[in-house]
Length: 201
Image (cartoon, rainbow, N blue to C red; front, side, top):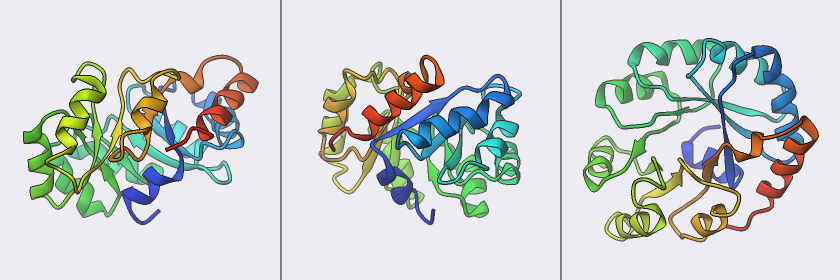
């Protein structure tokens, strides 16, 4: 993966994964990839996250990234674990510089025009719109996308199987992030992934 746009265009849905047990990481990744969702975001919300990234990296076809990266110190950790992209809930110059120095594609979170302008100042044009639903929903993103016509987005936060198609219909949206695809047994997760991978955009 050479650019964050390549990552975003791979699948219409990026599963947002909170892994508590690294032993579950590889089977989960296998089910999601088998269903057609190759891009996997492992959030750094648990002690098992870094090991989960390493486990998922062993699954053929998986493109594994680290989410909830909020400090420069975490950048070295996720790079060592093999993360192929990084997602942050917000946009910080210090953390962003560390990520860009590491040469890892980055998707920072934005919720306002000011956030996007700071990102543009850093040479960025691809953002996570977060938290999507509580930041005004699709109506807010459409309003933001008008003046920032060059930007592309991945809405995340409160996206459901029912609302995903509406988000994906927005021209500036390349993909959405969601956790609904990880609900249930492994066969059910694979089925959720297959349905999500088939969503039009």
